[in-house]
Image (cartoon, rainbow, N blue to C red; front, top):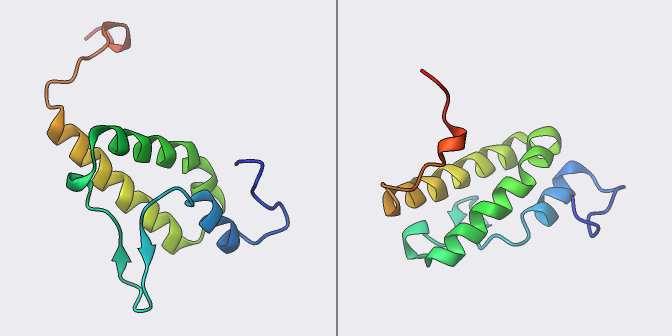
Length: 99
């Protein structure tokens, strides 16, 4: 968590702070709004993924079920877009295991 997160706030109140740098919001009908990952530039796409990964553990441990579902959905959207753009991404040989 960042220093700006209030320690006395409920998980529901903290989720908005954890997700504060995401472009998406929820409208009055509960429909997800936000930038389609395909419309994001490469830098914005990576920045959004970094933000989601940075907030992952806090969201998993403390957020509501709906906030966690939104987090999982958005992570899948962004990572799917990244993989579509970089199908031949370089794999670090030090991360490979012997077969």
